Length: 250
Ligand SMILES: Cc1cc2nc3c(=O)[nH]c(=O)nc-3n(C[C@H](O)[C@H](O)[C@H](O)COP(=O)(O)OP(=O)(O)OC[C@H]3O[C@@H](n4cnc5c(N)ncnc54)[C@H](O)[C@@H]3O)c2cc1C
Image (cartoon, rainbow, N blue to C red; front, side):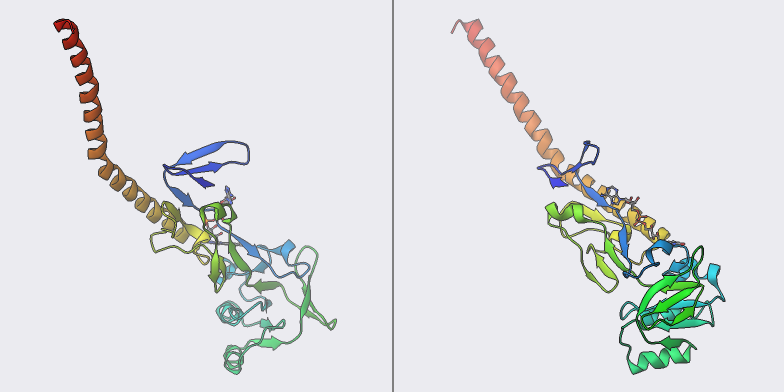
């Protein structure tokens, strides 16, 4: 992606080129999972993250939250709405006394020790800890680090910034980034956005882009018209001068 005098040029993998005056980035994010064998393979099936997306399907089951950072306690508390059988695998993440009390208050069992594998063939059967202990679970919940998929914007001076859930492209409420002409919608900016929120952000950004295009065209219109009139006058003026000279025999 690069900037030109009038906008942007996107070079496509197949060799094509797309030109535009404005850029709306909607390339989503990458879920970076902890490097635990068995986790990546089952992502989106029985390794999950979002209670709103998946809670109903696994309600009442044996769920284990594998902690990855400070947000994991919050995530576990949300999942207590879906099952009374919740285990919080600390997995090396420190939790405060207050957080421990919160988990206890919601009936969550806390297990120390590092999780070294998610086990099971067609379906998860549990996790294995570093000391060899296996704990039966049907569903694993984990908070991946969510990283906006925007590496191709580096040439425009835009790169993702730190966010409690990962790294995202900073933008204002309408999706306008710090780089003029570049807008962003969906997960690339809002790591927590669900489908309808991402889609709505696209509509909001599109309206903002359109308003900007109209404003630019409006500002430019009198200038374009004047320039055209000046050029016409000059060209016709020269011709008239030439004609007059011929008629008068100059
Ligand atoms: C396991 C899982 C389950 C989920 N379940 C739900 C659910 O039940 N309900 C819900 O509302 N949300 C759910 N979500 C969240 C949902 O996926 C997101 O909210 C939504 O996909 C965000 O839309 P987006 O357009 O921002 O990004 P995406 O949907 O990720 O779309 C980005 C698009 O950009 C393309 N792209 C990326 N890089 C480039 C590039 N360089 N050039 C060209 N194209 C590129 C990608 O291929 C992709 O098509 C779930 C997410 C996960 C991970």
